[in-house]
Structures are given as C-alpha cells and as structure tokens.
Image (cartoon, rainbow, N blue to C red; front, top):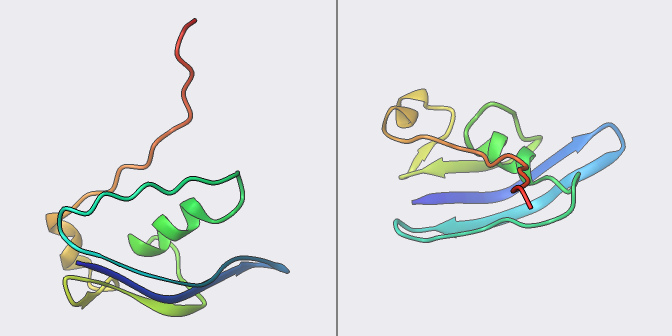
Length: 86
C-alpha cells in the first residue's frame, strides 16, 4: 500500500505540490496526466525518496519512504516522451 498525506513542494516562489493526498492498494492502476511543470515527476521523486517534500509524509506498506530497505522489493520506471514514426 502507498499512502501520500499532505505532501507539499515549492521551487522558489513556484508551489508545485500543495497538500497532495491519496492512498493506493496492491493492484491499483493510476495514471498521472498533466502539462509540463505541474509536479508529476516531483511527486514520483518524493515517493521514491530522491527528492524531499517540504511537508507531508509518504509510507509504503506502513513504513516511511525514508527507510531505504523498502526499495529492495520495488522499482520505479518513469516514462519518457517518445514519438512513433509516421
């Protein structure tokens, strides 16, 4: 289970995440879609603990994402922008 509670992140004066909260259970499928610069990658980076939130918490199976041992059993693959030949 992934639980994100009240996550906030700012880059200078630009607030990219403001009190983001959600919970996912095993087997849930979620797609984040939005324009460039709205915080999609930032949210993923906070979840996988490569970036720090200014506020809020992230837990994976009840353990804080600061516990690096939880990442031994999971992986993250972020998509890249691609164009198919026409």
